Length: 591
Image 1 (cartoon, one colour):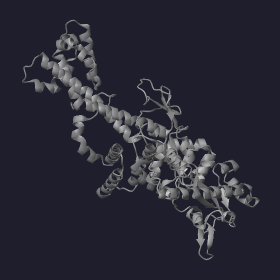
Image 2 (cartoon, one colour; image 1 turned 60 degrees about the vertical axis):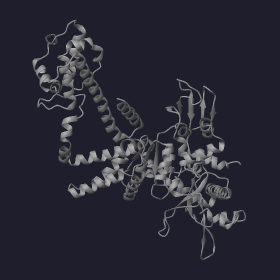
Image 3 (spheres, rainbow, N blue to C red; image 1 turned 45 degrees about the vertical axis):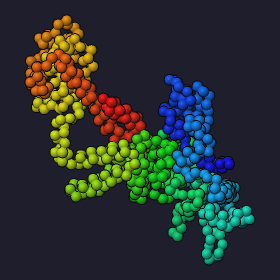
Image 4 (cartoon, rainbow, N blue to C red; image 1 turned 120 degrees about the horizontal axis):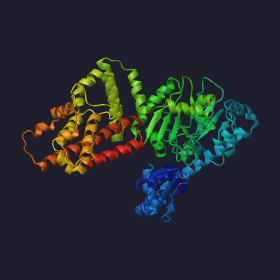
């Protein structure tokens, strides 16, 4: 049996080729394409390419070529039907079972799709050609929407005395027309009425570009009419699972990293008119985690830009709390707040593309910064308020599905809270700081107050062993040349000793010409001397201890780099930082 073309197209529209391939092949971005080692042949130089825009992969080593279905079939040794079921599951779609219900659904879809396609085409042409609608065209022109952009989005206008029903009533039965949501029954007149009468209509397409719903806007303000209305939910249209303009914007994801998410159709249309096409709108409801999940399939960076008024801010907060749970290491969500009483439509039409993009670059806030800043404004310094503040932020962080992101968002929140309560933070962490405080590689770490970090004590212990076993070190010079030091002063002493050991045949403490104060400091504060006090020891044991200390210091270097990356990752959540952090932690576990 044959799968319906629409079902296969839906799978392909939901899944980028790179998304499917990257589950088994490590890909790297190169221009508009991705490259990787061929899954069809052992090789050292990448010959395998993926092109999301053209929806295919190609292997130059073996001449293998195809789409996502071909790839899964060949790499997993599956039949076509098995590949379809696997990919439908990945895409979050119900399996097609060739049952009577599936056949009935397919029949309904064809009729539904046919009604919508004719409806959109009919009223789009009415807007463009009907002389009676010249005032509507003038209205759109005053909104800076010319014929080209109207045609791109197939914007239409439904007259109050519309004629679509009269023209097509014999082709479709009343029940089919009702199921589209385009019509409803007028109880008083007991007849079908068009839902979008006297409104400009904006077709809402599925990922394949087929219209499945409408948004409608009045052109004359009337108190008893809502400014915007949307199609009701139908069998083929769920508001929380669709986004306006995603069918067009998804195709740009191979060229652009970020997508703008706005509130209204006019925002999308105006940004497009100003050459900002990577933009979608939610459909008159609160942003859902499903919508974020769909965007994550195509883009790495979602920029949410709602209206610059109180309702826009409240919508942004709801969006932040709903969408933070979908954060992933390689994905980012940020918020862009426009000046008061501006929306993307008005802002871009006044300022233009470049100023909008520049404003976006300089003004957007990461999702965790936005959430923290919002609740911080509502918090006073009394214990009760701070406790509620911390509890709220923890509860938000705990909704995040990815364990890595959850850990670092929570760490970010707690670190920011500690800045509000510095005395409590100091008391809590003072012992820890004395023992393991990470050293800044660019400053002098020896403190005249005779307080040393754990790393400095390790350094002093290694220097103590070196100056008391100079000939042993000289004989095993290759083992110590790569030792890590973090204190500038201790590092200079170490490098001086190594240079002397390389230059002289015999080496004594006098040959080092070290300052007596330095030697006193080493002898006084090297904690290793207490361990060695009651041990006679031999060269072999001394060498073992030297190597252990050197290994400890090298591991400190790894720890500091991990700490630095963890701090950076808690702020940028970039894929590059995450991958580097993951690699270092892998090395740490091996060590």
